[in-house]
Length: 496
Image (cartoon, rainbow, N blue to C red; front, side):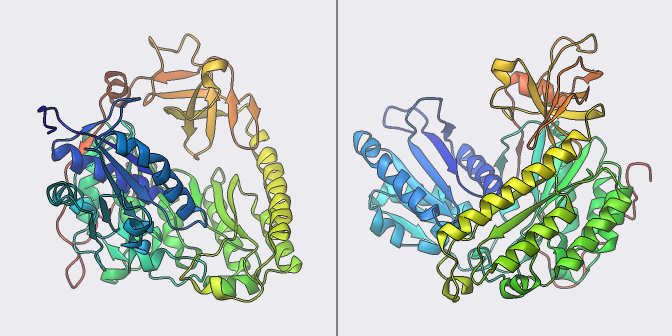
C-alpha cells in the first residue's frame, strides 16, 4: 500500500527469448499475490521490473540506456522502485547498482520468487538489495503466473542447458539442465486448458533433451503423446530443439499425435561443418538435412524455421557459401538471422579471426535476400489452400487500416484475414478459431482476403472479450528425485 492506502502498481518490461517472456508471467503472478496491481496505460507505476537478456551484444547498452531515461522519472516520484532481473542481472550482479545507483533491487535467474521480498526489504532498509543465487533451488513453475494470453500458454519442461556452444552465454547464466516431472508438466497443461487456453508451447533451452536428468532419452516423445490425451487442448508446439538430440521417436510422436502442430523450429547456426565444430555444435550439415527430410516424409505440410549466425570468428567466404547451400536445400519457411556479436565470458569472444563488420553485414544481407526469396516461393504455393487459424491479438501492424485480423495457422505461419462472410457468428474475436482460404503469399506472412469458410466461438474468445487472462497457481510435485519418475501414459494422441 502507498501512504494513502492505495495499492501499489507495477510494470514489467521484458527483453529476450520466450523463456524470459514466461518468467515475466511468473513475476506478474507473484506481484499480484503480494497485493500489487498492473499499472494502467500511460500511468507511472510504483514498481518497474526489467527482465533482461544477455545473449545479444547490445543488451547491456539497451538496459543501461533505458535505466538512464528512467532516472528522472524516479526522481520525480520518490516512492518509485526499480528492479532488474534475468540473465543480464545474473551476469553483471552488483555492477548494475554501481552503474545505476538508482536501482533498488537486482535478482538473478535462479531466484525469481524473491522479488516481492526484496522490494519490501529495499523499501524498509532504504538501500539496494542484490540477491543472486548460483543454482536453482525451486523450479520456477512452482510460482504463480499471470498469463499474457487467454488462448495460448507457455509451459516450461526444463530449465538450463548442458551444451557448451562457444558463442552462447546461457549455460553460465541459467545453469545445468533441470527437468520437471512429467506429471507436473501435464498438471500445468491441464490447468491452462481448464482456464480456456487452446494452445500450449513446451519450453526448454534444449527442449528435446528432456529426460536427460532422469535417464530416459525417449521422454520428450512420450510427453508429446501424453499431451495428445489432454481433452480440450487443440494445439501443442515446442521450442527449441537441438539437432544433435533430435530422435526419430519425436518425429513419430509429432506425426501421430493430432494436436501436435506440424511446425518445427530447428536451429542450424551454420551450414559449414568446420564452423559447426568451432561452435561446438555436435552435428554436421548432412545430419541436419537428414532430420528435415524425415520430418517432411512424416509430415509433408510441416513448416520448418531456423536460427542462423553470420560472421562467426574465422568464417570464410567458403564457409558462408556452405550456409547458403544448406539454406537452399532446407527451404525454411522463415529464419531468424543474426550477425555474430561477442559476448564476454564465451570462448568465441577470445577466438582469432573476428570477421570485420562490413564483411558480416554484406554476408547477412545476402542471406536475408536468399531466405526471403525462398520463403516467398514457399508461401506462394499455399495460395488457394484452406487453413485453420487461431485468431491472435495484435499480430498485424496494419490490421486496423486494412480491416483485417490476424491468426496463426497450425504450421505456425502468420495469416492476415478479413473477418467477413455468412460463416461469421456475431463477431470474430482473438481466441476464436476460423477457417480461411489463402489468396496471397508474402515472405513473412500470408493473406486471406475472401469470406471466412467457418468461425467457431470459443471459451478463450469469451475470456478475451471479457478482459480475463488466466492465472495459474504454482504447480509442483518437487524437483525430480533420484531414479526414474512415474511412467507417462502410453497414449498415441486423441484417438488412442
